[in-house]
Image (cartoon, rainbow, N blue to C red; front, side, top):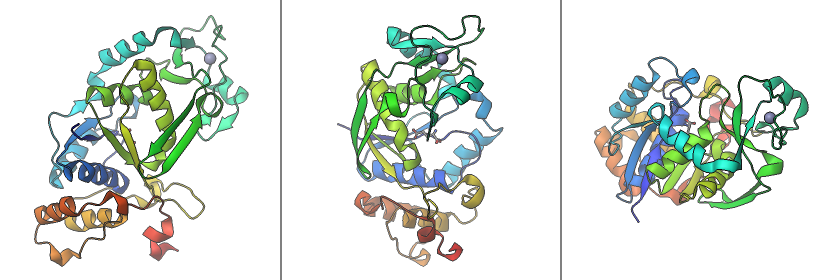
Length: 300
Ligand code: GLU
Ligand code: ZN
């Protein structure tokens, strides 16, 4: 089977260092095995798109010398495919009229915000509501999978997440549905992304099961966290990527991914650096975890 990987940035701002790591890891996993690397712009949520960020992401990637295969896929143009997938789920889905306020008050909290305990499963909670979301029944499913880097992972969907949204009340399709439909459509064989998305994976595997899709394999690389496990936010340590110090920036990304490249003066051009990176890529060197002090020793 041919290796097909992808990079799927959300255009909610320009590329930052975290997204460059995602681009680099997924790129090298694909290119080091002569696979394809596809680019997908995840602009499914039109309320989160920041002006000009699509152009800026694409031109930064070009500038840095990433070469994607085929045409860029835009989620904003995939509405029909998402609706078709949703319709095919039939009685596995149901409308939900619960308001955010109601859910905040009535739902047990979890790392995902709240756990939806199925208020509208049998009967919608608010029959007069003008708008409704569509949720997927989790049907007491426990999902196990083996991440290439994080090892085995298990999540009980019903008690840990609850029935989750596929289409929001504002008619936008959810990330979970869009990403699953597109990973199938683009025949992605492996998803390489940050470990902040690890706990989304069981929902995506379950949805693939419900839709009769293939399952890609998954590799979640570490997201730098603070000593107490908090994720680094865009605001604190992930500056926007500029095009001034391209080789240095890629070297930093390679270091973050445990590849230990030679120093800058070893490379006379960006092409040289990419050649080295593709030839020497070793996914087994990626650390499974990363704390702030390892990456920003000067801060601690
Ligand atoms: N669009 C998501 C993000 O930028 C990534 C989705 C994915 O890789 O599955 O965080
Ligand atoms: Zn509801």
